[in-house]
Structures are given as C-alpha cells and as structure tokens.
Image (cartoon, rainbow, N blue to C red; front, side, top):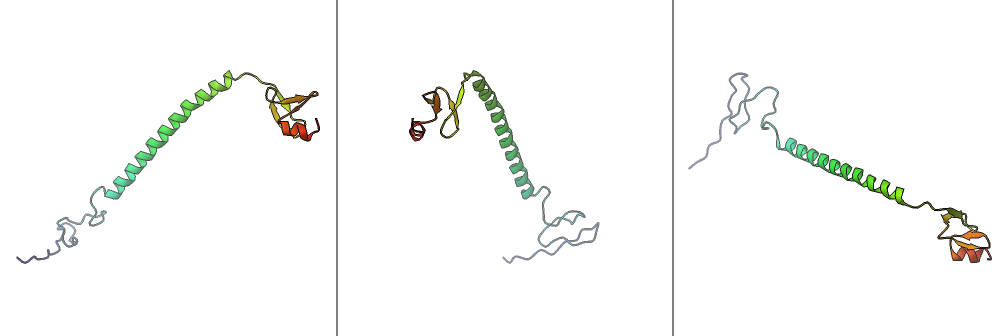
Length: 115
C-alpha cells in the first residue's frame, strides 16, 4: 500500500492555505499549527501556582514563628550587663569574672590585664 501526501487545503473564508498535513483552517490572529492553550502556557501556569503556594506556606510559617520569639523575649529575666576591663565587650554579670571590682569576659583577659 502506497501512502500519499495530503494536499494543502484552503480556508474557504479567507482563501489562505493551511499547512500541509492539517485539516484545520487558518484563522486570522492565530499562529498556524499551535493548538488553543499551548502546552508551554500550561507549564508556565503550573510553575506560577507552585511558586505562589511556596510563598504562602513560607509566609505563614514565619508569621507563626514570630509569635513564639516574642513570647521567649518577654520571659527572659532582666540581666545586668558589665563591661570587660580588658577588651570592652559587654557580658552578663553572671558570666563575668570579677576581680578587685573589675569585670572580665574570660580568664585569659583577666591574666592579660595582670590581675
């Protein structure tokens, strides 16, 4: 059996030729050979929906986490901060090393200062 190529068809309304091998008529304003709602536009739409869902989930998680951080911040006890006599950094008074009325951030800084 021999296969024969289809002859191009004509759109009777416009008189233009349709691409070979298609039975569709050429419609003004539409690219020949592309179906209505191409696969590429569907892929782009799916990607946009996925990104929107990700941003919504991330934003919702962040807003919930902020409330917990605010709660922790309120429950921390107030601590007095003291300055290291050697380097000047501030440390909580409970963690500082006090010698002769001077506070140090570490034992090494106490030794370097000569006390």
